[in-house]
Every structure is written in C-alpha cells, then in structure tokens.
Length: 308
Image 1 (cartoon, rainbow, N blue to C red):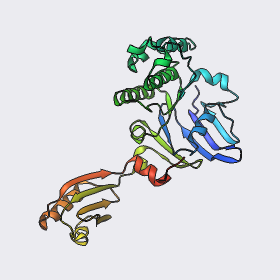
Image 2: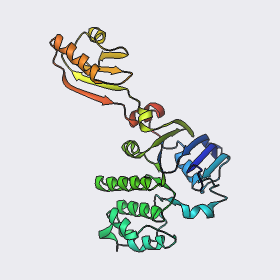
Image 3: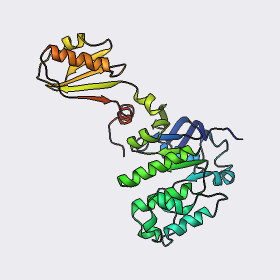
Image 4: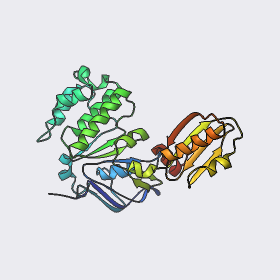
C-alpha cells in the first residue's frame, strides 16, 4: 500500500518571464485530511496548485502527488486525482445529468451521478443545458465532476464562490464526507470561515512562500479579548492590578474597554473583571468575549493593502 503523503512539495520555484511567482515553497498535505491553501491575489497559490495538477512544470524543487511526479506520471495519476475547474471545459449544450454520467463512465468505480445531483441540489436542473445553468449551478456541477470518480485526492479551487448559503453548506457537507471516506482535499479559498470550518491544516502563502502553517486552532492560538462599555475614564491601572498575571487593560476609544490575556480568556479572568466593576460601582454594558479568527491571522501576516 502506498503511504506517501497526498502532496509533498520541497523548494518549489516557478518563474514567468523573469517574475518569480513561487520562490522556494514547501508544504505537505496528508491523506484523509483537508488542507486549505490561503493567500492574497498573486501570492503564488494558484501556480502551486497548477504545478501539483501537472499543468505547469517546476523550474526548481520537487513536487510529488500520491508519491508520483505530476508531469511524468500524469497518466497514472489521472484516474486517482480529481480537479475542479473554475470555468469552461464543458460543452455548452450538454445537459447537467448527461455530462455527469459521461464523466462517471471514465472510471471503474464511480460514485452514483444521481446521488451527487441530489446532494448538490441540481435535481431540478438535471436536464438543463450547461449554458442555461446559473453560475452557482455550474460551480456545483464542476464539483460533482471532480469527485464522481472517487479520487484519492481532489483539488478544489474556490468551490463555493458565488454560491448562496444553502448551496455553500451543502458543499461543505460534501467535502466533510469526502474526508470521512479517506479522500485528501486540497482547498484553495478566500473564505476564511470556510477554511476554519473544514481544514485540518491551513497553509498561508504570500510572495511565493509559506508564511504560516498549522491547524486553525494552532494558528489562531488561545488569546482572546474581553470588551465592555462603561463611563469614560475608569482607572485601568487599578483594573489591571486586580487581574491575573499576563493581562492587559486599556480604554480605546473613550468609554470602551478592552481586556486581553496571553493565555486566553477564562472564567477566572471574567470573574476578576466583573468583581472589580462591582466593587467600584461600574456597570459593564455589552460585555463580550472575542477570540482571534483565522481572518485576523491572515491579515496580520499578509497585510491589509489591496492586491491587484
């Protein structure tokens, strides 16, 4: 049995006409896990994925997919790997169900096309020509085509872009069922909520390099914030003295208070804040706990400037 990782990249370099798109990137994706690759526009994630899919050749470094070279071993990998196309590649007059049945016929043990049509809410449009499907329906059909062959590994590029909330959740459920069945999923997405919910491991890419990698919990950490509103000018030094070690307290803006702690917000910290407020006759309004999200981490690492 082949126990090689689903994807293993070591020092990948890819250049276009003197511009370095990927600058020595390394990552590893395990079988039976969802690995999310995040990055701003132009960060190199699409080039990395296309190299894994065999559509581009590396200028330097090594890329292995299920233990094989995605270019030299493309024929052997084709029945084992699913690729979700962003757009195009489907005859415009073919009907949705017909297209999926044709795709299934290329594989020895495909999933039931009718089951996929039902799971992805395409039943009412099963006989609709591709050109008359909405963008969201075309997106769901592309996902179905990528997984109908029961791939060991599937690449999903923005699988829920343009989908309504119901279709997005149905897609998430399907991705989770793929993982449960042992399929490795490489997910490229701009939706931080999607990555946070689905991914076992997240790799953040910027300027052609990996800038962070880990589980969503590892990347976001345990740090949290406690916020409340009260009259302006509270003695924040006095509040801080009543809090556990490693805490911080400040007023910003006026009448809005923020309490943080490196070890995270726990019941003891909340009790200390409310006890201090009670002792000093302070009504803490709108008290809420906020934890750092994957989006917070992403923006800290890649900046807030718009990318072209």
